[in-house]
Amino acid sequence: MSSFRCGEGQQLLGYHWAATRTHVDGAGVVVLVHGMGEHIRRYEHVAQALTDEGFAVYGYDHRGHGGSIDGSREPGHLGTNGWSALVDDLTAVIDHARSSHPREPVCIVAHSMGSFAVQQFLLDHGSDVDAVALTGTAALDLLEPALDLSSDLDLSAFNALFQPARTDFDWLSRDEAAVDAYVTDPLCGFGIDAASLKDMFAGARRLADPGQLARIPSDLPVYVAVGSKDPVNAELTLLWALVDRYRSAGLCDVCVRVYDDARHEILNEVNRADVIADLIQWLRRASAGRTNA
View (cartoon, rainbow, N blue to C red):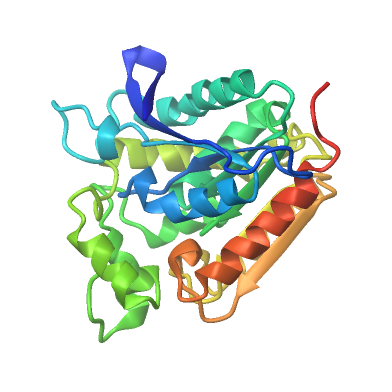
């Protein structure tokens, strides 16, 4: 456990999982970036699988989340200019990972809101990382019409397609134990504040701009993995919109995986072992040949 000092004096709770195997070909460093209304400890099983395969792993709790919650604010409240600051926080974490492993490729694995932050980060800092994997993701600007931006986001709104539902969060996974763990976790289940939500979608307009997307290095490997029953991607239409934008912008290595019947959290789905194995295989390929001199 450690901390990252970011903009405006914000301290983010961070974690480092050391590789349990060393000198493994195709391994490097992975920065895990979690989603909205959760925390990085929910990805310990992913970190463990990665370290078992020779990857060093870093993760952190976003501002307004988990151990990074400012005691003066409610969970999900990101503070002044919170969304922009959350995106900028990635720089501190990636710089730390890079300086700790100067000769290794640094890859990002980001989920949901974390993937939206990384999409925006890449417009200005795409050359700072060697590969990016996005899960539970979509073309963010096209998601806006389906949401009420006048108040803090209610994540249970995504459950509408799964009625009658056992819980308000059946949309996350077919694995009932994983859903129940989320529901009973006091650090899960909330949305971000309305001001930050509006700022997130304001930033999303850049993600639809071909000129901005052209700033991403064309040789950056990108992996996009989702469930076919994830309401965030609107029956895959918002997935393919994102992929088409990247390919049209000239990115030459965009890999797509769709898991039939899986819901939003593919890393916590009933077939999570296959999902993680596929992710590791892709990370190996993407990392190969990108070791820094």
